[in-house]
Length: 312
Ligand code: PAP
Image (cartoon, rainbow, N blue to C red; front, side, top):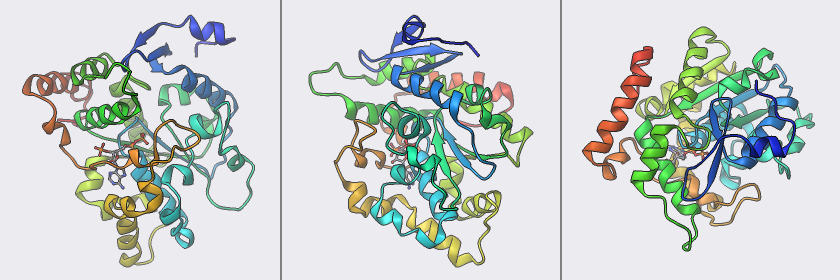
């Protein structure tokens, strides 16, 4: 992996504008905002997972919040009511935002010894994680993906919320362009997804790979598979039914904490920005046929030609 000594080295990396005037920097083939890159390097150099740890990995806007809720509920059945009072992102911290950031809000999880399974999440691509202790550890990885068009429209909405009125807006055309060039935070999306998909085929006991669409289509069945992967299968159907219900977006949206427009300490966007439509196919309300064609061509070229028949 490319070695960087200091901030000066970081600033000399190739950079591009992505959302409005915000910059992303290229490191080992992927694009990062500067704070996330610094934190990601800190994480890669210092995180030593326990064999019992679970890492939720994802490209942004592919179902992370949903999976955080499900993973928490599945592994903490007796305290699953915490989902009523605590935002899923505060129940399961993101390594590069809450644990290895310059002002970490959840670093205590590294030293806590309450005996619970530690669950972390990350958007850092496998290509970089494979250079860290995460690769050799027996910890398990759960990866969620989502079709590229809905991922992009979800990202576009989310980033639009982050723009102040005086800032240049991010048009849909610009967002599509950046997404297709891979110059979005943690992009390219296709390289991110493909590597975890490959790992899940090679090491199915280590990497559980699921799509947002599969989860939507048959939530209960996928949740049961997830519980088995995590070595905590359900004793009865009712247990699985309950977890599906408490993690449903409509249930979660009703909790005050998830409706809140307060800003979490670790990010500049309000808690409620993680719950929007939660539907499959929302891109059809925004993309014209040329945009759909452009992304579908890219999906065929990147996914289908690699044998991964997903995303159209
Ligand atoms: P993150 O990577 O920033 O954490 P992430 O949670 O992956 O974001 O993506 C947010 C999307 O998941 C939103 O999709 P949308 O913009 O298309 O609506 C959000 O609505 C959706 N989402 C959040 N929680 C759930 C849930 N419990 N069930 C289904 N979808 C959900």
